[in-house]
Length: 186
Image 1: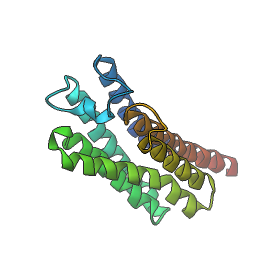
Image 2 (image 1 turned 135 degrees about the vertical axis):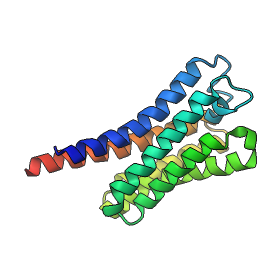
Image 3 (image 1 turned 90 degrees about the horizontal axis):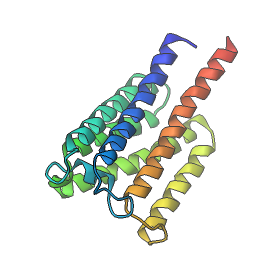
């Protein structure tokens, strides 16, 4: 595997690792946080949360890395996916900047983040002519619908985490698969 491919995989993996690490650390130091009552963004509320700096900084850094990854690497290979993933990264940064204290602005950027993140694997699959992203998108819709019609019990943090984690695994696994194919071709 080439050094460029290593850096590419590392950048994408680090983007998600930073996000999930900051979420995990924030939850560990927030005994009030409940998966059954809260949104993940509650951890970033600059007045109500003692871990807001950790949470929000993690989101900003993760979003920056995701935007860089999409611009540097996906832009050359895809027409739509790179734009969606760049905007996903940008919205993630805005979630960290405009925490819940900003009210409607926070709701808008958070909603856009999840829409864009959920559309990214779909666009990637359509551009690369693979089916899994279409199935994942349908699964994302099912999760969000189940949450909003109260079939999925708990706080909104549950569908937020599930859908973002699945998208992260999908994107990282596609990078590893491409690296394996590249290595096999040599």
